[in-house]
Structure formats: C-alpha cells, structure tokens
Image (cartoon, rainbow, N blue to C red; front, side, top):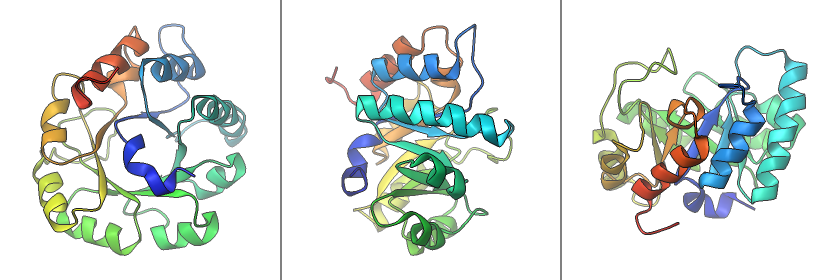
Length: 216
C-alpha cells in the first residue's frame, strides 16, 4: 500500500541497526523517533545473529505498522520476506532490483543506492521506486560509503528523471539537511543524527522541521 505513494514517506527516513544507545533499546529509539516525526524506517543489521534479526525486526515492523509508517530491510530480501516488510533497500552489489521485485511482488517498495550517474541509470533500469543518493556529506556510519559527493547528483537526477523519488543519505543532520531538499531530494535518510542522540524524539522533530518547514 505504501509503494504507490512512496514519495510522501521519504521526508525523515531512519536507517538503524539493533544496537541501543545510552540504555535505550533499538525499539525504544525507533518509538521515540516515530513520535518525533520519522516517516520511514529501514533495518540495516549486518552483525546480529539471524534469529535476533527476525525476532527484533518483527517487533520493529509491528511498531511501524502502528504508526502507519513503512518498514524496510536493507539488502536481505529473505529477511524482508520473513518479516513481511514493506520493502527492501539494495545497493549496487546486492540482489538487483528486478530480481528483488520478482521475489517480493508488485506491492513492495524497492529502493536502490546510487553514488554516480551511471549507478543512478542502473538503478532506474532495475525499477527503483526511489533512489538513495550519497554519501552526500562525510560519514563514519557506513564504512563503504566512499568520499562525499555533495548534492550535485541529486540535482542532475531530478533534472533527468523528474518523476523519480529521491532521498539523500550520508552525514546529514538538522544543520545541513536543507541543501539536500533544495537540490531536489524528497527527504533525508539518517542514522547517527537520530540513533546516537540522547533525545531521538527531539532530533527527529528538528530534522522534520528542516525538511518540511511549517509542518509539525
């Protein structure tokens, strides 16, 4: 149900693992972030045992459903299927979007990462519902993100494919989100800007104010 209107859910897109912070569990952080206005959550967990990913991922999925927010899984189409997630986000070296679509069906969201125009072209050919463009700024969260690319690719992609939904990712927080939106992105995807803050609810609210001025 989310796929047909994916653009509206990209405003403040939280990417998180199952690691807690300052005594708060991943579920606590997600709930606070949703209270602050997060519009989509992606579970990107690379280290935890699969049994834990399924158990805690299911709780996150149910939480998101309660808030009417899409819940996606990073990379793992099998995990997305097991959790009945609302979609997946895949990188350039993961299962191609067209193959993911065959497995997940027509109603699920498929996001694809792009860091160059060639990668954006490939993502579009793979039927991406949205592009995750970055790393926009320098980031320590994702070790393989590469050098920051700024907002240029967002602008170029918007000019080339005016209809495509896009989210900027990489080093984004409330202080630098506005230029990402001005370049043509529909929202920002963040990790540390919410997950590693003492008050995830307030951090999410501040981001929402920068991305959607005038909205609560």
